[in-house]
Image (cartoon, rainbow, N blue to C red):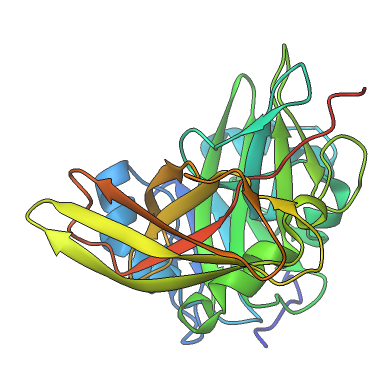
Length: 295
């Protein structure tokens, strides 16, 4: 682990124990004790993601911003570190869930996703902050945020992300997004608004056939089997297109051609998605959650 002791500048003008970036921004201190920039424009984010996604569990951070020297707010209001959540569905005011619009990865302000940190400053270097997580970071996605007056700076990173089982990570860090005057998030296991998708689709198994590319289109196909002893209603399905880094590219809703399946009955499905991203490396298909509208 990197040294975390703050060296106070005095008459000898000692520099801090953490590296100092030349340009304002958010930085990770890499395994080699070098600085990896975390924030930038969209094109830069895409280009730099392989490096930002491969940080280690003992990663620490340095923030350089000229306004920090004049910021008198408590530390926990200035900088936040969050574990990024996977958004399962968007729930409207009626309690009805639908597919996610936009990115399926989000910073959900739910307490369990916030990572405890310590902020360290060095005398004479008020424009810099040394951010140290209280515990080693588990493999996954993270977002570092500097809160400023009326704005914020955000940087995304991954901790050993290429080796993470994306399906398992999504299940463990699952939330639903509730739409309204203010967007809110709830974990998929809190049971307060959306019934778990398993309650509707439990016993329905999806088996996928290798997708076929037809020009600019991809054909997604497979079979749903009712493995229970009861008649089961087949919910709509969602196909999520992912690139080699596990980033969501687009999705498509698959409406079942058959509403109910008898015990042991199977139903095939097939949908053709036009203009499917050429960088698609994997397609995940799951059932769209069915919700409780309060009746």
